Image (cartoon, rainbow, N blue to C red; front, top):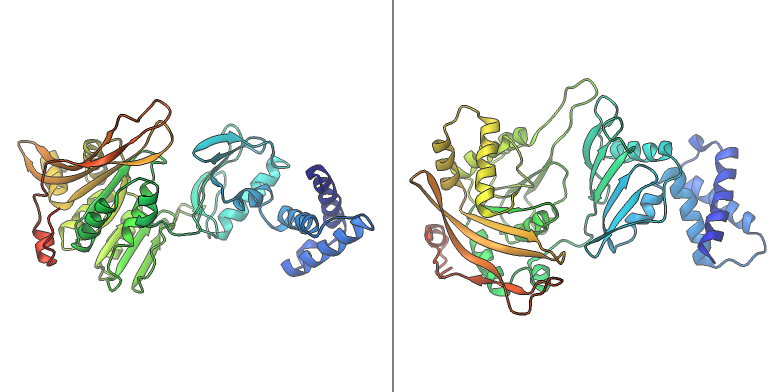
Length: 412
């Protein structure tokens, strides 16, 4: 059946349901049964395939109790990101390319209802007093909401879809982001409890890489994960505690920040702390945790290069402790962070690991860097397609004492 006919039948059924049924008195199951009955009655003796009948029922139910058009988008596994700029402008990302959909939400009021449903499901609230909120869907997809009058184009939603299957190092190898040899070296570094920071720009795959790397953590350890919106998929670890931040309520109280959670996690006997993303004053607490016996910590941060990540860390620490001298901050960073992995999204939309660098000592006012692997383009690269690989430099890993403590004799 043509899409236009399905839309027309769904509209008829929905109009009857909303005009004639007491929706508040019906459970979800009862409403679905009523919609099925009305769909059969509306179709009558006309031939409509079972698939199309199911599609009509789903469409009507979704528009009343679900998320409407958003349900349809979220069910499409080829879509990786959703950007809704007001009810008439819906953009999606497929295969790394952003395109506009030829569909829209029925009205701004309907989009606002969907937003309240999404936010309410996660126990959060968004309104004119608190118009910006980060939350997640039931499947773990990350959601950012901005309401008018802050968003001039109408209610704005950005959704980073949650992968149904956890990211693994094997997948990163298959995508060409790293090689099996590098994956093995990273496995050793994680097992030996090196503190690792993953940095990169927006959409470079930081959380994805962190998720893959975290699955190298030995299964008998106690791990605390701390995130704005829980999306890490660490499997196989029984002693796992996942913590999530909370926004303040309408009266301005009840906020729980990443900084609060890091401080609390230190009293929970963690063997490792995994922070989804460090972006403010909590960087100081994270570095202090790394420096006080919580080795093996993993985290991510926004930066355009390894050096830029160090500068960003300095700035973030100053947000949390403005009076600290820069020299003390740099010494803290140099002694806390062992390895920085830099990721980037290149001109052909591919995501690559650009650099794996060891952080050495603080000397002569600067933090010394020791690049171990660097991405280099080869002769097959073009303007449209990037070709190359992550190549080993001539530099050896200097601080190998953690490998020795872990009984690992391999050279990295």
